[in-house]
Length: 190
Image (tube, rainbow, N blue to C red):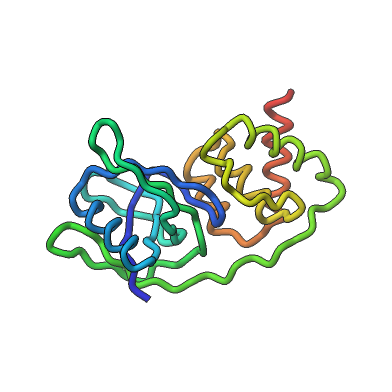
């Protein structure tokens, strides 16, 4: 499967929102193509380089599907996308316009996992945080009883370094992510 790639300085998780402001012509064309054909694009964390120039990326990313768009008062295109399925980048090529196209292999979704009793306080904490974050998280369907969904939301919003977020995206160990979230929340409270 081939998809257009959008290297970013962020880690997108399945089910998570991704707000973007698009100004480069290669990405305006990509967004237009994705919207017309209702196809996703791939989001990969930048390993080296920048969002506006050449960059090397990590090999595991998340497909993103556009759910909303608007023209900003500054003339820039604003887009909101939602993370879908994780993927492994097999190879990539650069088009003449500078857009990278990746050959990818989808990574199986983690099966839903009932939240263990030891972590019973986490849904209330996350619900309060998501409510405080406002518009970006309002339209998300909430699955507070699913440890996979819950850990993805916590990892994307907690202030941890991008490489640690990337390791969490690459991992299919929900219980390890739960322990990490619990440790991070305890360290903030102490």
